[in-house]
Length: 287
Image: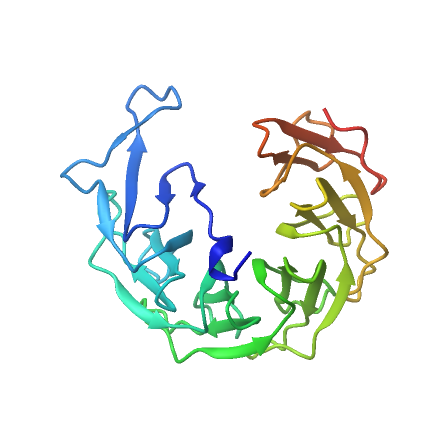
């Protein structure tokens, strides 16, 4: 499978990204019944770059309205478009990244109160850091090496120093790469931990209720979910893997049964969904 060939369509609640050059937008229906309707005013689609993937929503210009950024995997850019609070989006601007950006994450990496972006560049085995200026504009990309084919990225404070650290699921290497944040917009040298085969998605949460963040990956080649228990310093224990359905490619976290424990849910290519939860870090049998 080629680096650009790992592109897949991901359907979000409000945004549909595919291999075209537009994003489809929808708004909640008035009935509040979980359905969606086209955005009023004919704003049902917005033009972005080719191969859009992994849209993220955040207030990028500090006006209190949600804005949109999306990685354009076929022309090595991120499109950024400002929201007006009514569901309408302005014409996008583009910011160059590394080769074949696929996933995106958003957070304040240099602690200036403005949201920044990180793209996983699967064509270069890097991440690109785009520092925001608070107006919706971003600086020149700063790249950092990670593992082979960083298909998913996450930001979290893994070591309790109040700086955002970087995690990537390295699809080609079967690893998670962690680079600790400096608080200045950059990252320290990376370390890697093994996962199951072909980690395609990564999430962060406290799985064993010790107030230390852990990580989990959906392992597309291994048909497993791997849980890595954090040690509070940015490191992890050996993975504990749980078998799920065919080719899990996404993970979601929530307390689904109200017991205070994090539950992960992994949809699979077999059109099934596996769920596991537990407060020990060892998942119960999936359902």
